[in-house]
Structure formats: structure tokens, C-alpha cells
Amino acid sequence: MNLVMKFGGSSVAGGDCIKRVAKIISDFFNQGNRIVVIVSALVGVTDQLIEFSYKAKKGNLNYVHDFIHKIKERHLDIVDDAIKNGSLKEDLASTIKSNVEELEKVLTGISYLGDLTPKSLDYVLSFGERLSAPILWGALHDIGLDAFCLSGKEVGIVTDSNYGEARPLINITKHQVRQKLEPMLDRGVIPVVTGYIASNQEGFITTLGRGGSDYSATIIGAALGVDEIWIWTDVDGIMTANPKIVPSAKTISDLSFQEATEMAVFGAKGLHPRALEPAMIEGIRVRIKNTFNPKNLGTSIVNELKIKGGEIVKAVSLIKDVSLINISGAGMVGSPGTAAKIFDILGKNNVNILMISQSASEANISFIIKRSQLEKAISELEIALLGQGTIREVTAEEKVCIVAIVGAGMKGTPGVASRVFGAVSRIGVNLIMISQGSSEVNISFVVKESDGEEVARAIHDEFGLDK
Image 1 (cartoon, one colour):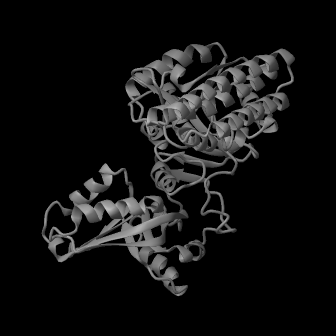
Image 2 (cartoon, rainbow, N blue to C red):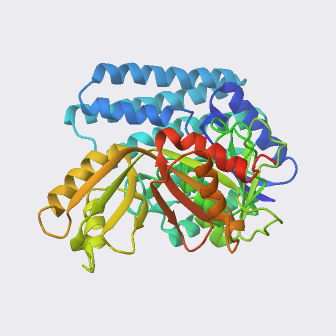
Image 3 (tube, rainbow, N blue to C red):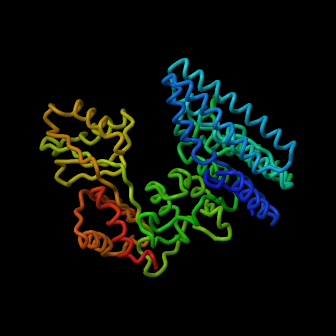
């Protein structure tokens, strides 16, 4: 088969992990498969790059120099653990030192200027993958495979200039990726590509958003028209619930793209919310697989999925760290453009809305946002809306959470909502807000954060998701 394999940060956490990844690639390559590898930064590195970018902005150069030393030593230690060949070790050590020196110069420049733009932050964040990918390339060479290391920019992924959340320009990207990679694959070379990184049309580095290595994998897979895209992580696949909350949670064997997209939005392990779209358009199967249990088939995601008899709900997810805002006023009734004005204010202040509900009376609108954005959102809404006669008050409930139930089997099945809310009622929990789209694949509702985990367990039990 033609495969794209993406390995996340937990899969390349240390020298032993990288050797395990190289072995997995070798095993499948030696079975006659053509493979493109996408690799993430080492686990935790991207978070550290963000943290120390902001410390650099504040002029904390001592912290920056200490960080630079630690990140260099961490990667050099992994090279030492993962690679046997002496000359290969020296080449990789030189590459790492060169990249780290460049990173230090960038952070020092940010410190002197006291300014951190989205453009410069993307440049800093690119170093995570630029440091990890050469190590995996070296591990493949170390076991006798012919590999070639490229950045997402070098492979031809072109995006708009929305730094931090760049979107690919698909047509030019497809052409350039095919032109770059197909000759390598024809020669039996394994391309090792940095995930997460791309560039705009001017050639400046952009990033695809947190977890964007998944997106890199599906963009490249769609461009090459591969048979399957495998997302390797540290779990056996997508689960019916977070096992830390519901210990009886099971791995889901099959999902449709629609179901998987809903679950990605609600934080399913191993999925980037936008990553599935390129594969869905091209009809390419995506698998979520476990680096530490490679024989497990994982979770298969396809366009069309036949619903098994009796299978209604697939999973229950919980989103914490969110808050509810309620806007009310009799003047809202029959007043066109009120909702548009509210959402325009939030949009201009980069506040993303996770969930919306409005009563038929039009007298109030409720919506959910990230808790970290609550203070800014309330302030901007009060300044813009109060005192104009239409809006009477803007109120908030800070500590709430979203419970989301996902499953294609809910569509056209009567009584699903009754069972969901009956299970919630039996444990004595009050619903604060409810939302369901016309697709009927997702029912979402809001409860107090303190009740969220108990509600998730109750719904998991109600639909027998542990069976």
C-alpha cells in the first residue's frame, strides 16, 4: 500500500521510543509498502517553546539561555540513545547544535525588541519539529533504510498568512507535494517530513495550529492519493470516553468521518479538528494506532459507515474549562441583527464560541466560550451592548462543562434524548443549556463542572458503551 504514517510527540519521547518507531516503519516498508513519515516535536517541546517565547518577550534572557542549554542536551541525549553509528551521531549533533544556535538568536532578538508577533512565534515553534525529524531520519539510516528529511515548507505545503492557525492552499500544495515526493517514493526512499510546519506564498514559516502534525499528514496523504493515513499515538484508538473519567471505556473500532470530526472538536485523543477534511474529501481511510501496541488495528475512520444493529451512541466526551454567557432583554424580541452584533463583537476580539442556544421567544441568547476568555468577553459585550435599550443584562456562569454524546445511530432513532436526559435526571443533576444540530449525530448540553464526570459515567452506563 501507499501509506502516510504520522508519529506524535509521545511516540518520539526518547531514544527507545524513536528506535521503536524506526522498527515499525522498517517492518511495514519491508512488506512492500511505500511510506511517507510525518513527525511531531518531542513530547512537551512545543509547550516549552511557547513558554520561553513569552519569557523572552519580557526580557528574561537568563531563563532563555538555561532553556537553550536544556533543549540542546535533551536532543543530544536522545541521539546518543537512538543512534549506534558514530559518524551519523556526529552529523546529527552538528545539525541539532546549528538549529539550537539559530533558535537562541531568534529568542534573543525577541528579548531585545520586547515584541512577539504571531509571525515570529510561528518561527520559534517550528524548531520543535526541525529538531525531532532529523533524529528519526538518523534512526532509519542507522538500521539501513534510505530516508530523506524535509520540512513542511520544503515539501511544498503552502498556506495563507494566518500565523498560528494557517490554512493550506490545497491546489498549489497538492501539485508541489506530488512533484517533490513522488520521485523519492519511486526510488524507494522514505521521506521524513516535519509535521505542523508550512509556509505562506512569500516563503515565511507558518504553523497549522496545535496538533497540526495530523493536518500535515492528511494534506500530504490527500496530495499523493495514498491508500491509508495512519496516526500513531499512545492509545489503541479513539475511546468511548476518557478512561481517566470512565475506567470501563473501550476502544471504538469504526467511525465515520462525521462522527470522528464531532469527537475531534470535543478533544478526542489523537485527532486534530480540521485534519480529517482532506482525507474525507479524497475518501482515504484514516487509522488511529498505538505505537506501543502496533499489532492492534486501532480505530478506522471512513466516509460511509454501516450502523450496527442496536448501536446508537458511540462515545461521550467532556469539555472542561469553559464558561456560559447569557444575554437577555425584551428589546431583543423581533429585533433583527441582534445575534449578528453579539457574535461580531466576540469575533473582533478573537473569542471563539463553542456552543449556542437561543429560545424561540428571542428574549435571550446563551453561548459557551473558553473560561480563559470570559473576562474579556463580558467586558467587551457590556461596553458595546448595555444602555442601548435592546439588551437588559449580560450574565455569566463561570464553572460549567459541556457533555457531548456522539453517534450516527442517533439519527432517526426516537427516544435518544429521553434516555440521555433520563440518565442525568436519575443522578439528580440539573441541565443548564442544551443544543442539537439537525444532523442528529451530536447532542450537547451543559452542566455544572462539579457534576460533569458523574454525568459522563451515567450516560456511558445508560448506553452500555463498556460492552
